[in-house]
Length: 169
Image (cartoon, rainbow, N blue to C red):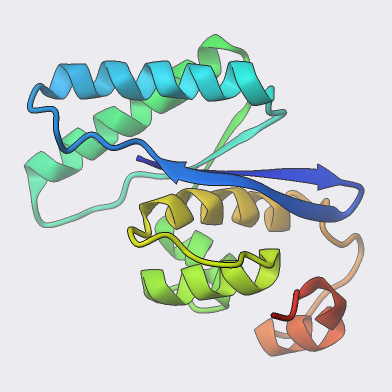
């Protein structure tokens, strides 16, 4: 389970953390769900987020994998709801579109754009954590906090008019 945290000050977002909960070593699916719930509660109690953004379940070919993913997402959502934190879901395509301008972007493309947007020095080897960060950034872009009243004809127009928001390396 990947997660990312950003802080919003005014109309600017600032990177806080990205990481992932390593669950491969556990064979018991119910234990994995318990660990997801506990880690989500721990993050909420530590950082006191105003909102949570989560990637919505997506349809895949493996029904068992889809069911396990849906349960994991539900447990994370239950943790947020137990602390009365509002939750917004975004489809994987919407997240990719918000970050890269391409709803079919690869994990590597999303991670590269996040690195540029947030000035990250390096990316993790496993990109599950950048998926979590991408959901947070997508929520920021879709919440109306980023830029009020401006419209753009496409991604290139947005980038051209907001070059100051992209950190150079």
